[in-house]
Length: 399
Image 1: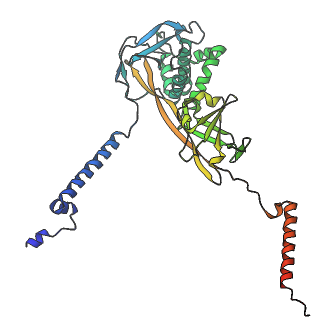
Image 2 (image 1 turned 90 degrees about the vertical axis):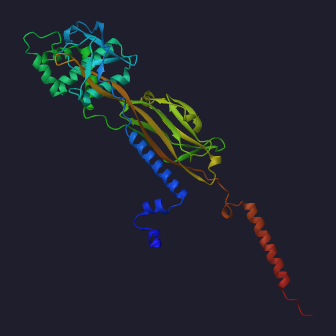
Image 3 (image 1 turned 120 degrees about the vertical axis):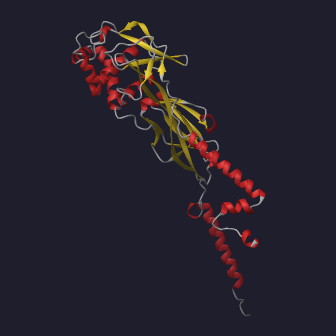
């Protein structure tokens, strides 16, 4: 009976470990389980990289006392006031979504559970605004506000329906709401409309949301050419860097992977000027989105001493940092203004370009390439040798 009790059960490996396993085996298993649990728990807590949510209420809201674009045809109420909220000690511009309602100066705004008017086009417009004008001037903020209202009136049916409903009020308040007449007046003001219309067009073109960011390379040639008075280098053809969507790119970095030959350099061509960076130097250089708009080009330069009779396969890398507006709506109540606020979310996007470079040292060939002198000397030696051999093997005459 005792032997039966000591017999291991093949269907119960955990029980066997507990009953019959050695002390060290049990502790090893325990630490392995703890480590696996920790990794899983860490992974579960790190799956989201979303920005910290905005608070449920916004206080310390303020409105600028001055009126911008006052007295111009098509501008609601004869002018637009700049509005801000304070967050973490920073003064952030905000935009009204319901032009026809009063703004609750100095009041507490409550965060909506979902957005009513802040559609993808409006978010795209505000992304562009926050990217280009993080601290807008009074006129810039007023232009963006007008563009937002005009876009919503012409391309957001819910917003237009709400605005149209205010036109029949017995006593329209000072925020009367966009109307066909008001839109026509705005468009008739050529100078003002020329500032507004590009923002509306941008919002319309991105009304289905921004595409995922992408940074890419394009080669003008697959070949490296020899350069230098003594063939010291091989240089690639021009390489173009491009980005989509270009409007949200903030900056980008370049690099070479570890397979690149020692002494490899990246040549950056900007404004007609060439600047060389080593593999180590390029890691610390941050290029701006404006560099792409100016048509920056790249070349890769490799010492031939690192390529003798060898082929180097390596990657040219790029990482772009993209800004996106993450928008939220806040309001006081149904009779007051809904405002749009948000943060800029930075999203990275990386890409690489495969490159292959080689350099073969030319070795003079023999035979047909020999000089005539060497050929004649060889021929004479051959004939002399033949004569000597013949003389030695010829039988002597009988006397």
